[in-house]
Length: 183
Image 1 (cartoon, rainbow, N blue to C red):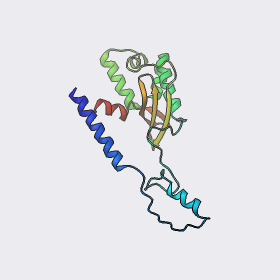
Image 2 (cartoon, rainbow, N blue to C red):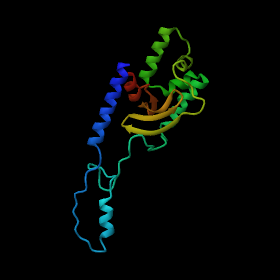
Image 3 (cartoon, rainbow, N blue to C red):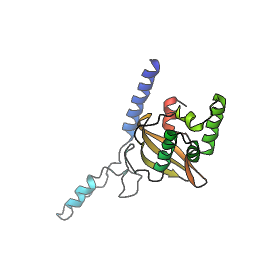
Image 4 (cartoon, one colour):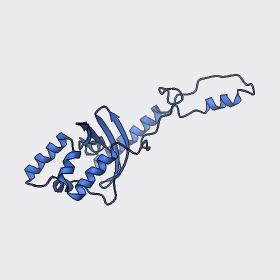
């Protein structure tokens, strides 16, 4: 119970700090020209609240949590992963797992005396009834993140992928899940 109160206090204080520090820069342009031709321009300049001070002119910043894209590159990897789990296809599963994640699962499988990779992994990951929803892929060189919704994930959860041998593969990593587990 003490952890709940402490966590709630941290969350509330963080919200207050972000609210106090955030927001767009104030418009300090003092345009005193009141000619009839410029009134519309002046009104437009004074009401632009979506521009962040450090962003290039004329751009806006999307709030966190909004849909940016439908993950056209990484959605097929996500669907292939869950299809392999659903059909218990270990060969297809190995094709979408990073080398490190595959090795970790094979080692765990060996320690637990399991024989089939797909069956073993299906014990730890719920196979959704409907296809997983996938959105907001972001790339940083050979690393990427994508958000998933469905199965065990009742809210959008970011997962990490890595590019190996020209193919995108699951790493099993998720900053969102690490934060929840306190890792």
